[in-house]
Image (cartoon, rainbow, N blue to C red; front, side, top):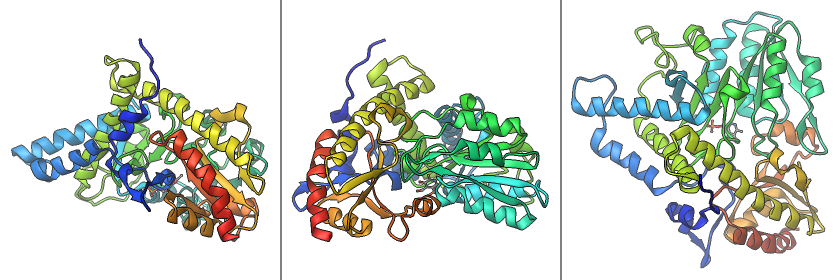
Length: 420
Ligand SMILES: Cc1ncc(COP(=O)(O)O)c(C=O)c1O
């Protein structure tokens, strides 16, 4: 097995969007947590589908048969992506939020008044509101896992004290889309299961940064969004087949009762599924390029994420060290450089006297794409006392560079001076 340095030039060459310029200089895409750029081969897979295989499901003719073969391969690819054995455990849908609402309604039909659901203060609202609304429909009680304000990690003691014999579900993120914290999902699964509860994991933020492993984590359900990991705008739900086959899904009466069809309501966005398949294959090929051509897809994804983690951690280190040198700026979340494996390179910054939204606008004018505000992680910004306003969020992906981090660190104090 050979291992080589991260192939950043060949990675960037595959993303035409990165060539965009603002005011005569290359744009810096630090907006990945809201959606990544897309490799050319993904765009080509989408157009190839629409040009040559565009058909509905189950027809006795060539385009439909080719389309169905692509769909079957996409289910296998996403099973490889999340570490599942069975491809029928993967469902596609409009996006993570819509899939979570569908699952929450089905699960709520198995809950009773007085049952308990646990969500977290670290999560994106798409992993909170669907559970709160479903619980309200049946009179279930919602509890919250707290957050430690000093480093934005989950307070697992508050999870332990919230779990009880009425707990039916724990819904938690694999990583925070605001502070970058990576949560100990495996430990949370053990705690939830010991109490007889199921675990739902929102892996949307983690997916472009680390290998998802539903087998190792032992969760019951997991969602992710391919548009955050170099694919098109679509969502993915994985669920253990024993639950997915039995839960009372909301579906059209005449539709099949088999999985995944009972969860994939209506006609799917086949072209986005074709693009998602290609995004997974892009990542697998990245893994093969750093670790050997003979790897199977799961092995290649493992190699890709090993390389991505090492590369992103080096950028994250430079970013954290650089922000620490700016007197009026500070990072909210894990800043200890010995704990980089506990965080994604998603950095929440507070700059004294600056509105995060104004700062993000000023950076945008100078070609750095970032976000200001709460980024839908409102329970977290509220818990940290950062409302109104939120934070400046800069999120790196494996196509970003040390040179971009340096340019950002140079621009940040100038933008702070411009908006304060
Ligand atoms: C952590 C996290 N969860 C959920 C979502 C919602 O995903 P979707 O847009 O696919 O509904 C997002 C979107 O930003 C997110 O960052």
